[in-house]
Length: 327
Image (tube, rainbow, N blue to C red; front, top):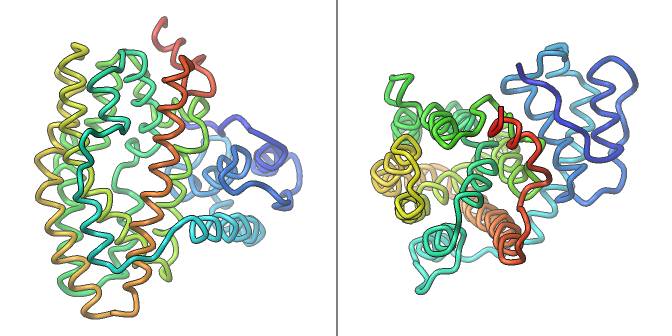
């Protein structure tokens, strides 16, 4: 059962009431586009295009007034993303993704060298907001591509969806990971525990995927994700070995080490290369997608590491996780 998330301010509270038929849609107001209230409200509206909510009428998905509210929040979010990035040349942006800083100090480095089991499970919770729907946002770009770019991206997506095998779908592998770690594997179970930085990354994917005008940004984001995943996944495997997590937790990451090393080349050469050969005016959008991904990933990493180094939890609350751990 997928329930509406807990509100995090007046906007999301009034949105929930409207979706339940108990009030009018709110006005967007003047909110921090990266803040908790705006982020969860935007995620709620996007989720109507995914699994939806059991208590919400499916007709809300295309309600004109709700779409106007979403458009206002999207504009603020997109403006904030554009203000937060630079626009280097494409090859420079792609090459930067391949650079491994030594010694590294990212999340996977911390978990490999210093993290404990609780921090690893917190990381699992943060990432579940996307991995429960892994590759779904990227599927929206398929009908917006042509030729080799479309065929190559579909090939990558085919792997993400398990090559036609339900038990090998990456979303299923992540659910198995959560269950093996003693956490609930229910769809979006951990959403209420997860703060805005992780949710904003998924919102960015949905924003790029739902707008044809942002197809270049979606391709750039997807390329950035595929290029950077394999090294990070390898470090996560080392962390899981050190912390003695069960094999089912490791399969998700070992799959990404193997698959994403191949996907990196496909995305860079066949998807981006062919897309920009056909539509060179999308170059800046591809770079923007790469840079926006790096911006939001850095914001999440800063939140995680600053929380852990101060001895605090990185989650808003561990209530739902503790219920599943003890239940």
